[in-house]
Amino acid sequence: MAEGFNPVRYSVIHDKNSREIVMLVGNGCKWRKCRFCDYHLDSSLDEEANYIINQKALSNVTGIYHELEVINSGSFVDLDQKTIELIKNICCIKKISTIHFECHFMHKDEVKDFKKSFLDIGVKCIIKLGLETFDYELREKILMKGINEKNPEIIAEYFDEINLLQGITGQSAESMMNDIETGLRYFDRVCVNIMTENGMPVKPDKKVIKEFMDKVYPIYKSCDRLDILLNNTDFGVGENQC
Image (cartoon, rainbow, N blue to C red; front, top):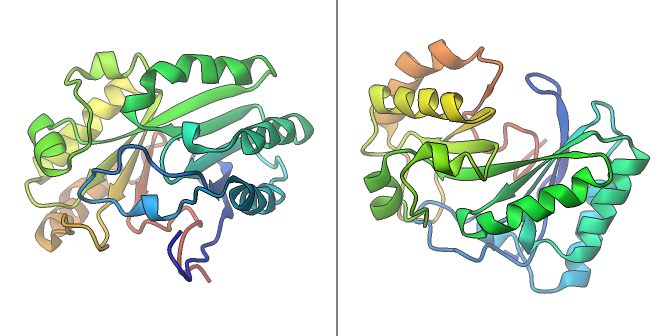
């Protein structure tokens, strides 16, 4: 884990698909080749230390909306088993009926059994994929996502929701809208993340972001099935929160 990193790990999303959200710590993304993401730095191989952090974040869950989103630096498979069992326990105590997790495409074959383990306790489990874009060349040659499937219909057999990354070189208003429309066609929900500066090679493109704000954002900002994060802390978790 990056030294001095002490983010907010619990928040409540009141608009659009109202839910609580926790940012937990796992043993780290197993892919770690993405050229735009340094999220994997929020991880540790010390499972007990991770559990202590996760326990503290999860202790804030109230069940106010009966829906909880769990994010972490990778996939649900990177969370320790004690944390998973704690999440299940909290779902039962706080009457959480729907829970969301993240997952990399490389773990797609583990999704079915994981979802069933929550269904067995009466909780609907929704899995979100960081797809970033349906443009295969951009996704795999520039972003290095490690998703070897081109067909969105096949991807949707494993995943319920997707993240899209927008505001980078190579995109246009037309391509960004096409990604959003394709996402809404095949998936239950879409979350658009506008690229923010970090230490990785792929950087935000100010011209593309302006094009997004001028031509894309006004069309989709009120869409109930679409979340738009203009900043990566807009859900209330992450670094530099007040």
